[in-house]
Structure formats: C-alpha cells, structure tokens
Length: 174
Image (cartoon, rainbow, N blue to C red; front, side):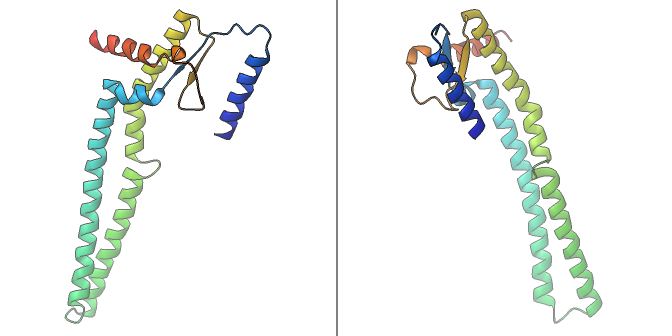
C-alpha cells in the first residue's frame, strides 16, 4: 500500500513538473461502481448465500461437538471407562472435523474465496474493460481510482457515472 501511494505521488509530481502538462486525467470511484453495478450486487448476494450455507454447516458441527462435550460432562460418573474413552475419541474426531471444515470452506484457501474469485473476477474484468474503453475513446492519459489516494479533484474529472452508464447499457442488451 505504501509503494502504491509513493508511486502515485511520483506520477503526480512528474506530471506537475513536466512543462508540457497536456495529459488528460480522470478518476473513478471504484467502490461506488461496485455498490451500484447490479451484476456485481448479484455476485455479492450469491456469495453471501454460499457463505451463510457454509456457516450454518460449521455451526452444526460445533453444536454436535458441544453436545458430545455436554454428554461426557453430565454422564462422566455413570459411564464406564471404555465408554467414556470412546465418547472422548468421538469428540476429538469431531474437533478435527470442525478444523478441517473451517480450513477447507472458510479458510484463506477455502471454497468461499475460490467462489469469490470465480464469480467476482468476470465482473471486475468487465468493469476494467469499460474503464479502458472510456479511457481510449475519450483520450485519457490516466484514469485513477478515487478510492486509492486522490485527496481532491474537480468533479468534472469524475467519470464514475459514465462507467456505470456504460456498464448498465451493456446489461440492458442481454
């Protein structure tokens, strides 16, 4: 993040100090585009459904573990040593099952993140393609992301609405 800001400052300084400052600049509020682009909102809703499903399954595993723990605690005096040992083994297996599930579904390399990339990347690619097209069609030298480091800019350089209009126009053709 620090290197991005440094690069951003370096680019801006170079442009300001260049005598032939004829670059055409614009910026986009990427977060607004993501919040308002219907296709991306659909992806987010789908990911929320998947995450809720995984979370419910995880919660069920934890509940089963807690039930085993409660059984052992409440019946410890009544259970034979063999039966108690068997229930403790079942509890350990359930604990390992919980950890495995958490890692495979919710962990950093888990299914939820794979789904996020699988479903989200095509939409992000579409957004980036529209930004590139507008940049080429309008002759912009630079289009910055307003979320990254622009402290102030004239609203006339904000092409966020233009990007949204282009994305929504594409969605209307389907």
